[in-house]
Length: 475
Image (cartoon, rainbow, N blue to C red; front, side, top):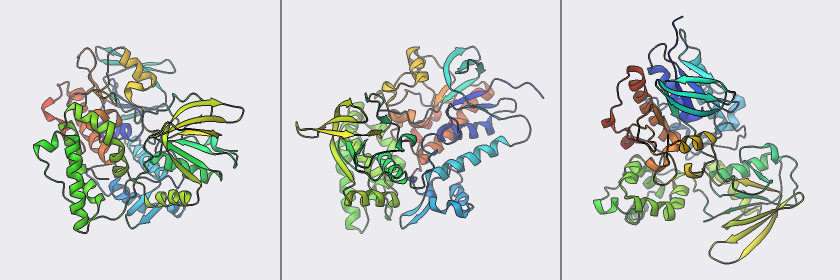
């Protein structure tokens, strides 16, 4: 067998990394494999799709969850082939079919296994270890693994996924929302506190009940907003925003509200308006001046999130039932202090809009506060790369600063074969965390990387894939 050339490494094997690796393995020339690196025990799942709880549902309809932008029915056809044991994870509703996230993880695993079984020279190599360092070299990078091995690679795609936040909570009673082990043996006479009120909170409540916890649950978040619910809604065309509206977050909000009124008067629904905005939302975000983007993040982000990222109807039924029964309480405020006691923690919460403080004794604190920013991450690889100036946060500190071809820009301005996609593009694209957003990115990025690494030619900067990322995506 001919000698293999240094591979292209993809760091992270969640949805972003898995799809980038699959596309790239098809495009690179024979002898140039893809090295897919994953530090957890399971490939192709990430945090979101590793859950086994059938009540943890995708918040996007199955009809729009195909991994491939040019094969929109792929996931729906895969679901049709599932057996009777999987029916509990497939929920048909008037708003569409919603599948369990664990089933989606299996779907991605099947895609990965299919790529590994191809004949001939290996095009895809799995590396089950953590990447702890990247050092530039003449041929690309020297990649160091936690086990101490060093591998030369021709290029690297950072696909770290959603960075976990909330580690600043100073308590031994904090638990990760995706780790169900600490949910065993909970007392029914003391509440569990959930930090956050978004989709992760919804999943945490479902997991608690599935594990047999019958006690009270308290969720605390700054605004106290719950995600809205998917429902049938006729489509609504995206408005033709004028130049003044495109330069102001407040003007955009005013125009969207006007469109909602028009849609309702025509027998439609606000959901159709929001969905109609999706194909052009990245262009709207990128067209806003930096101060207006910051204004959006301060004042409108939470409102957009609860309307854009909706609950599947079965998940919403669980939350409604818990709320009606008084078993789930929602507080608007923030955690000011935590004092660990013997067997529980005392949490001081300052209620929003007042000086009032409330002390709660809770047995666990589930951190469902959402995605951490790159500027605040404790991810060791990203921290090391930032310290060396190989990467830097974007203007908002949400993700990484990138060029038009997805390549990461460091502090020294040097061009390197280093790219990223998915949630690490948040500050640049804003809409880049859902499957419909990322699948197109993965296909485009694979073409860019294959062109540069496969032929040695420079990347075509005039392609402007960032300006087209997310076009055609719907929730």
